[in-house]
Image (cartoon, rainbow, N blue to C red; front, side, top):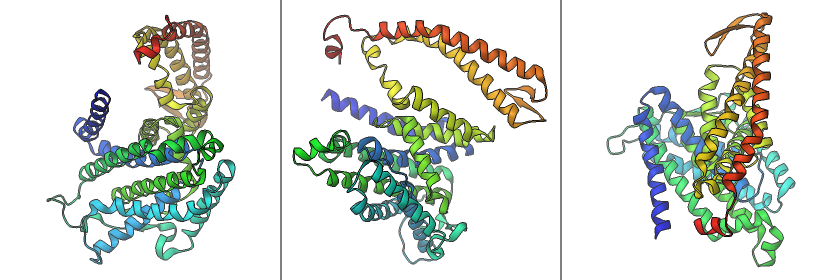
Length: 415
């Protein structure tokens, strides 16, 4: 009962955050970013069902997102011309069903294999569908894509969805529903066996489970929820193009899931939030935001292979033992020089980019032709690097102390 109450409290808090965000940040820009986050969260969680839960590395997950989005836009067009008549709140479900149908067809042959073979099949399917979108113009609209108007649908309890804030609350409802059902899927026998097949398909086969069938079920579920994300994209932007089907979109959702933390349910949510903020906010300040995203991905692979969610979960033992506070000062002593090193490095990259012109970085005018500016950044980076390196032994010692088990079984009893 305590576990059920705890989980219920977490889900209620999650719903409260979704509903309360527009009240905390009441601006057009904030609502726009929140709408993008809603789409990205469902999309990233659906990809985690493939790679994080089922061990299927896909380079073509955007196919189900894009096909669901295209069918959602065409449905909006049919509502506009009164070919069909129903509220647009069901549009994400239309996208989900199309994503499911596509996943059933593609998964019927692609899930026979795993590992590299599956990854190459997904890449080939993704490129095939992306190329077809430029050939079958009547459905995909060519390079211009397809657009529609969401305001022609019937009102839902007086809500006509003219404003982005109304679309956000619709998206928040779908995010909560989709997140809940994806979590419940992980608790089913199929979801549990997906983890087993990911870790040891031979043993799963030995105890009587078909690895291919388990992969197929997970694949279809992931396609369904990716289609829901595509339907939300169609509602939010009222158009969709070939870009939503291609490898760039598939790569983006891979980054979300990996940076957030594969295998952790909350990981893709963290990754979706981080990448959406980088795309929406950082891109307003620098043209090199994609470069910084790539650097962050490389650093994550090198130093946080389990993603940000994995880094958070590393502190579970220290939290249980009440020693988490002892890590605060060591983190600050190491983190501040690391932050200064990163700022100095970014400043030098920006000077290379703004060659021959004066620009402002954190309110400080910098110029690539000024040798003193290069010297200042270099000295700051060197000092920060040495400070960070010298503080690492103290951080390691504090970490070992916080996570050490004083008595046998202490951690097990506390958990």
